[in-house]
Length: 446
Image (cartoon, rainbow, N blue to C red; front, side, top):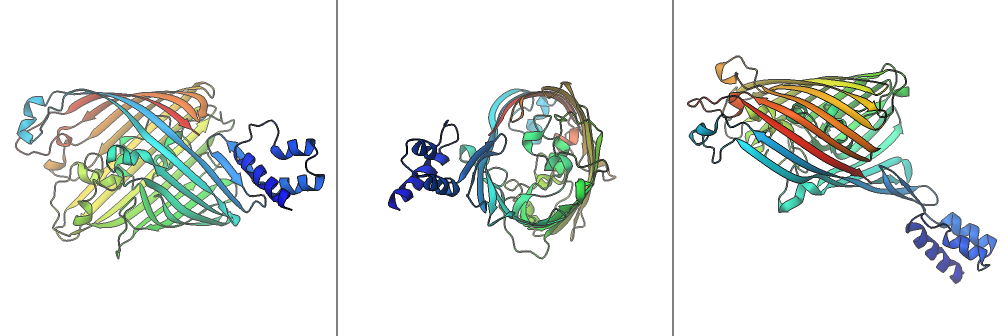
């Protein structure tokens, strides 16, 4: 019995070391006559199964199949070259800028470095996921809410009804809900970044009808974003529904699969939240995209002053569509938002949209794509809300060396910003700017 226990332990260790060995330890012991046939079968039955799947990672599963853990992740190494318009250099000091906005910059960064741990426990219907993004704590500073991104437990009664509790992406926006590894440009559009609620902690009910013809999601969450906790009477609410009349569409942008029959998907989503002036002032540290000072629609051209502690009601709507067929992919979204202060009565409306298309010029290997994106962060009918449009035209080339698991991407973007996005000064009139940005990114999913 003692010998068998030792052999079981040795076999388990060897199994976890990988499946690269031509023969397992128990096979060698059996061939040499060191264990009996009965002992061999007992070892095999008790040894955890180890497997690897590209894009998902290494999976360890117990012999009875009741528990599993998968460890994977990905790295995105990025280079960005930016040529900024110098048309306002002579006015920079007059509006409080400490440096001239014009000129060129060259930047290397690890945009994302994620470790993903997931699996199931007790039943394959009870799953979990924990995702850490080490780029969010690089350099000793905290970005985008910190290290932890996903941290949830999911239970599936059936495909039509599942419940999830914990932290994850808020279900608003088609492009935002696509993994950063599955984009056909280096990153999402500035419109998506301006409206995305990003990550939050809460509970969600969701499911899909047979064949994925319809999917739905209903959620309530804390409302302050990634890794922030608050006690409030006004939790955030989000809802999303999609219709896929010709069958379920894979949640990626490019049509690497060379879809034989046309697929189309339509989506709609709604988001509502109430934040206070104090909570709004912390937005530089949390991940609420619509509040970020240099990217969020409610912060880009805000023309009112909130009272101390004042609450603001945020509402957002979105419509989207996608199409895939034989290497051609087309997608687009329209988003609208409003913010209404409860005491000062300051109100702001915003809208934005993007449309993009890609085509596999070499099937499953090389893709070219184009995107047009437009954002108006303040569409109120007054003089101060004018001249704040942000327009981007982008082209991209993607080389799928091993699908999305190993790919090299490059894109170029012409960025046009009207003067009120450069400075909100009423005494100094700035000029609109036209910047040029080029990015290259290498991605490895393991």
